[in-house]
Amino acid sequence: MKVSYHGHSVVKIITEGKEILIDPFITGNELTDLQADKENPDVIILTHGHGDHVGDTVELAKRSNALVIAPNELATYLSWQGLNTHPMHIGGAYQFDFGKVKYTPAFHGSAIITDDKQIIYMGMPAGVLFMAEGKTIYHAGDTALFSDMKLIGERHPIDLAFLPIGDNFTMGPEDAAVAASFIKAKKVVPIHYNTFPPIKQDPQTFIELLEEGIRGEIMNVGDEIEI
Image 1: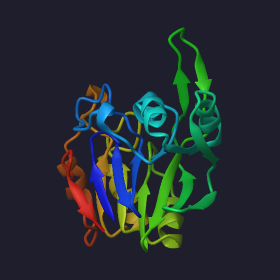
Image 2 (image 1 turned 45 degrees about the vertical axis):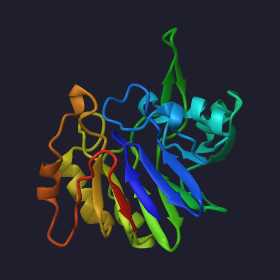
Image 3 (image 1 turned 30 degrees about the horizontal axis):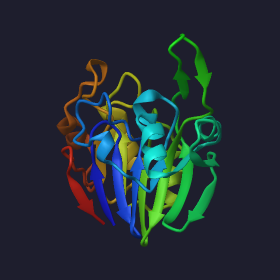
Image 4 (image 1 turned 45 degrees about the horizontal axis):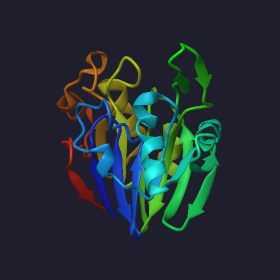
């Protein structure tokens, strides 16, 4: 399984002959190396309804006929846009032909803000456990630190975890380092930082805060890990 990072919270997974994009915020993301008109995912997995995570989902899915997996309210909304969706919710898991997806809690918000200044609630935000080829990836989504991360790590041994470190809207480096100690993944990667001024961070700070025995890796945009 090949896993690559593409700025902000965008993660690409290649497994079982499928290309999966998590939170494909491409247009407007100055840190990404992806081009929305050149991506053709088979599957899109969303953590919540904010624009910097839903991103280019509608355009990508309409062009490639990608399956969009999302929390129930967000999936329903996107189905009204003509997308092929699979609704899920926190605590629920589903075995697809390309792997198993399970949604975990995340402490954040989830809404779409319309051009006419309306806020449309998109259900609860979530993290994602993705399991395929005998490996488990945890994408925490946008979240604060919470103690039940310990249970996530205990019940689902994690090979690779993506944790937000931007602060202001999510965990900062200090709390993310505690989260890493809770989940005890084989490798942790910082995400959701430096895209906007309020979330400017030095990812090396996060790496240095990790407790002994936890392996952290800063992935530059376009870097790939094989697990």
